[in-house]
Image (cartoon, rainbow, N blue to C red):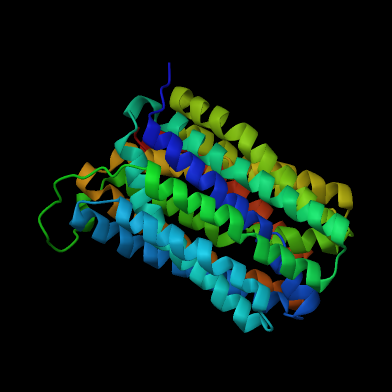
Amino acid sequence: MNKINKNIVALGANSFFTDFSTEMILPLLPIFLDHFLHATKGEIGLIEGTAELGVALLIALSGFYSDRLGKRKILTVIGYGLSNLIKPFAFFAQSATMIATIRIADRVGKGIRSAPRDALISHSTPRESSGFIFGFHKMMDSAGAVVGSLSAFGLLWFLGESEATFRTIFALSLIPGIIAMAILVFFVVDAPFTPAPIRRFRPGALSAPFYWLVAFQSLFSLFAMNYSFMILKAGDNGMALAMIPLAYTLYNLILSLFAIPIGKMADRFGKATLLSIIYMAFGLGALAMTSGSILGAWLGFAIYGFFAGGFNSLAKAIISNTAPTELKATAYGVYYTSIGVSTLISLVVAGWLWDNVGSTLPFMIASLSAILLAGFLFGMRKRFISE
């Protein structure tokens, strides 16, 4: 029987309300940039890619200092605080540059908190149930996202699709953000430990299975498409603006429903095996998007939800199992940095292709690449990732 201690529950509740706040804004930002601030797809890709690289670099630094300090909570609080306080400032944005600044600052907050938070979760996680525990945390995260995106849909539906409605939603996101911070500050307990001696990080201190994981995930991210282009493609396929947050809600709902089952199946059948299935799912979802139809967009969002339910949580579970205690946060940092670099390249290239060739080609490339990588990972799962 899988047991969840109070710290895991509190961290899950914090993530619920943080994502409640975030997902009131996130599905609207690409639309806001495209419709009201008249940004190009290339500019949107650059904003998202830079934000993802920023989060990755900060995760690496935060993970390293968390391991050196012997403390996890303080950096987690700082990171969540920055994200939850900066996002509502989108209410005042008058240019794509202002949105970019807010988006990057939000991701910097995520970068500061992610590695120490994951290490906090790992501290309270038995090896034999790591897939379940990280799946539980992802489920709480995505449940908050469902509520947030449904709130955005409801407000757009009742208040109209005007720029003023978008700005009102941005301002209201402050409320769940404050609740998230209260839970984190008052209910989450730190997990202090004796830090490793201060020395230069040696790549050899982390295992070969860890590096195989990083290689596969980075290569996948080099060709994958993130949420912003899924949202824009839905509009390109003919979906009404007010319905896009509802499709995004479907994505989060599927993610929430499958996060724990994926984790449990990974604990039973092998995390690398499930990760190969996750890759295949993304490939099929991207392929559905290329149909150019509204039905294809709905199907793409649903399949993308299944993919997101396992992509990072399975990777984090593998890292939890393979990295030594005193280097766990550093390992998460190395992982996210590599993913961030790949994501920046992916989104900039995808945006350029969209502006110059059209929306179908980047999704077709993403689909075929994901399906091929799924086959390679499944075929080499035992050799490359020992669990």
